[in-house]
Image 1 (tube, rainbow, N blue to C red):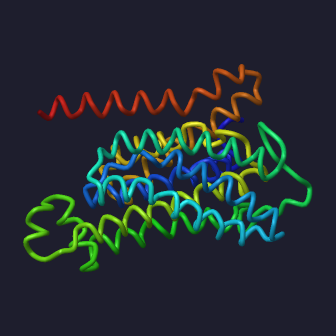
Image 2 (cartoon, rainbow, N blue to C red):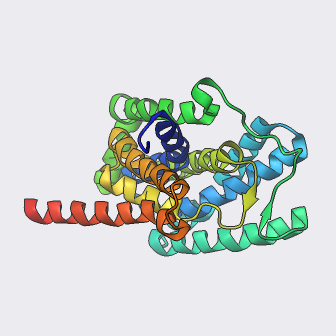
Length: 282
């Protein structure tokens, strides 16, 4: 049987890194920053989580290391766009490429290996209720938390205002630069959590470029969900189910190349349908 409880569990595991990154992108989008550096920031989080866990012997200290490292790495985008007024698309692409090279260099320097690193002493996150790590449940709690922050808290209302009318917000005394720095750094922390789940929750290792396009899928989830936390959750869930279904079909004998492409095929179809719907409305 293809569709069963096991598929749902796998979908939740696959969903979590994408959801964390997509929430980061949605938060930035609300402040008027189109963040496509999610892939690279999450990859830095993956590496830092494994390094932190390996050095300290604690998976949760590894998670903390991932959050700190990804937040610090997001300064590349924050300084470039907010302080120097650079193009966020160009800086995002550069940040993603830098992260691939940086983590490939660090895996050789820190662990003395290449390709991937795993060790029997490496502490993983373990399982809570339903066989899921604590970060899975945290990602679901983050959705209503972010929704309340954006739509019920004065901070969120000001944030949405500056994203829609930055000149008006600035005229009213809203510190636009400070808000944008805040959301980009907060987005970095969320990407760090997604990276930690990917390298310590789903598996217990770091592999070069192990995010494998999940950050880009998160960008699509932000667009499909219109940067609303609930919409982002539903979009990310679609991609999580597609990835889990790909693994299930691989177990039934389909070629790995075909099953690995499942989330990206769904991404392209979702973009096509979204574009067609917008054209029809127009």
